[in-house]
Length: 301
Image (cartoon, rainbow, N blue to C red; front, side, top):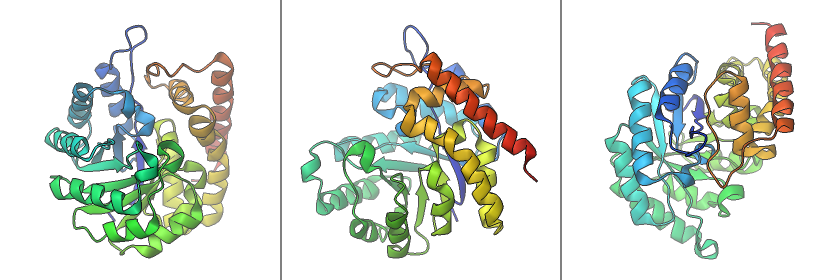
């Protein structure tokens, strides 16, 4: 499998004060991630505040990560925009700067007109023009558009569309996507609280925000499932879920960056209009991190 394993949708560090992209922090964080068991990195995903980056910043970010990230490990760049032509341009630029794959979100403007037919035409045009393979990206809660499973099944036959990142956490939909697509088309999931269940219904791997904080713990969950050690995997899922919920649905990007700081990384600040985490949120995430750390210390290896 190409995407068998855990990928980190890397947070993008911005400096406090001028809110500039902090490429020194990017380098330091990528070196830290390189010491983990991650299968790959995703830059400019939702948790990477992709919507807040200029084209020049996006180019610099991909190039910088590629310089630090080992060539034998995958680098995926989020290149989706609302317009097909802009998505194509962004995908070509990411490929030129070293991305191995492009992650292309559903267009989010003119939601009522984003029918299965419109989305299929969009993705076909991007895939036809892209010099690197494409991963579809479906996250209805964030983008307001759900990529229908029949459209996924059609797009899965395109030779340059190799997989789907499904971040909705709906196990029924994930199971349908796996069943409706060929064996060489891989579904990866973006919801850590449902990672165990998703792997059990056929997902190839996960692109989950909590891998910014505890990458080896998430990789261990994947390995336990692959080894058929389901009782241990389920126990780890239960221990991981409170922190995973905190860095996504509960506290968002600000919570993710606060938890990364607890883990010793340099996450920087969220970019305005996002606000940094409060002291209460930071304290809550410290407690959840400590609880997971205690579980991991006591768990058999």
